[in-house]
Image (tube, rainbow, N blue to C red; front, side, top):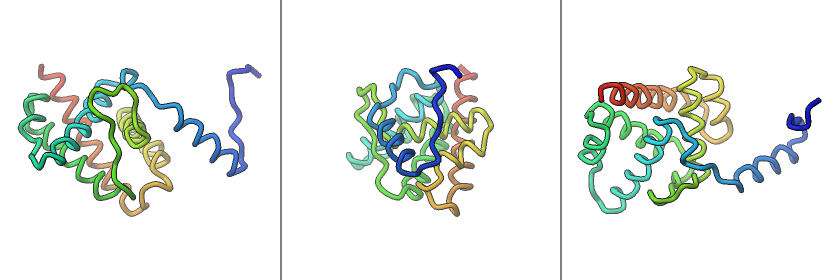
Amino acid sequence: MADHIRRVSADPSERFSATIAALARPADLRALSLQGLQLVMAMRMCALFEAAGRDPILELTTRFRSVTAARSVLELAEAVRRCWPESFMVHRPCCLALSPDEHTLAAMIRAVGGRNSAAFHDTLQGLVRADRLEHLHDVTVRAVAALEAANTDC
């Protein structure tokens, strides 16, 4: 077998160690798809606006040139806020590294973009309660679709 193929261990402690090691190597924002980049940056913007006590809808509408996309992104941000077990952690807008939560969001977006609901559920298994997965999947699908539509209207 080729050296670049890594075997996944069935041992939970080895899988746990591998997960921790992967989280220690933050992903780069520049490697994301357009929708992934837009959603991660929107989450960062929502966090800034929340800290300032302001509504981000106008800024998001201006940025995406679409009220529908802005509302879909805000709906996703609210769903994540309700479904995540702890506060969703974001980096500053100027940071190129992704936080572990942003990395998970990017994986959710990749799964939705690839129309792979099994990968979406696998990404969130053990993180988000099972009864919340469908709602989170639905709002992610709507946000990605709204951003795709806004990007093609340009």
